[in-house]
Amino acid sequence: MKDQGFVRFEAEQTLDMLGPEAKAAWASFADSWNDLPLDGFMADGGRYRRRRFAAFSASADGVERKPHQPHWQSRDYNPLNGGVQRWFEPVTDAIAEHPVTQSVIRAGVDLFGDRAWHVELHQFRIEARVGEVGQPTPEGAHRDGVDWVIVMLVERTNVDRGVTDIYAPDGTSLGSFTLTAPGDAVFLDDHRVLHGVTPIQPVDSEQPALRDVLVATFRAESGA
Image (cartoon, rainbow, N blue to C red; front, side, top):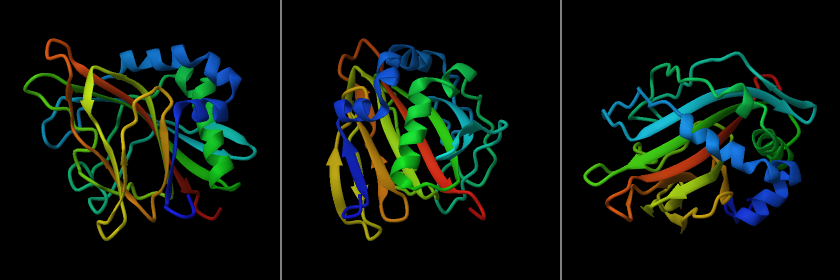
């Protein structure tokens, strides 16, 4: 992380880091992606993204969910969908309190430093069908406007492509890889690198392609 501004974890490494309780409960965590509503804030008119959202305060003292709130990014960071308050459907209580969710947030606190963090959690499902490409990052290579970002693959079904690209601020490529196994993850220093994912399409044209991802962003609380 210090050398490159990002670190990639293979699924086995991630699950070991999250611990046995999270590993044992993975199936119920992943199943919740089948209950994500359509993202109604796509400025490109796309209907390829489903999501839920939640915010937390987190530190070494614990993790506490905040009242439901909008997700907001400036257009400097998200020229496609930024500049508006986006009220997404909330992450369910069961998933907010789930061992995997709690372990991911605690892992971020452990790696990013013991201070007070504002954490935003996003459940994303990207769908693609023949004639309808799914775009994990329709805004292109970007920063999120936070301090740190965790991206963890939850499931990947019938997907071709979906390559993660990491760039330096001057556009120099720092790495490309594909998250393929449930639990594959990348942790990013949002001040130092940009990230993006290439569009997905189905391997089997008769079935949809589904890419399920958990994204957690960490921003230092004001005054912390």
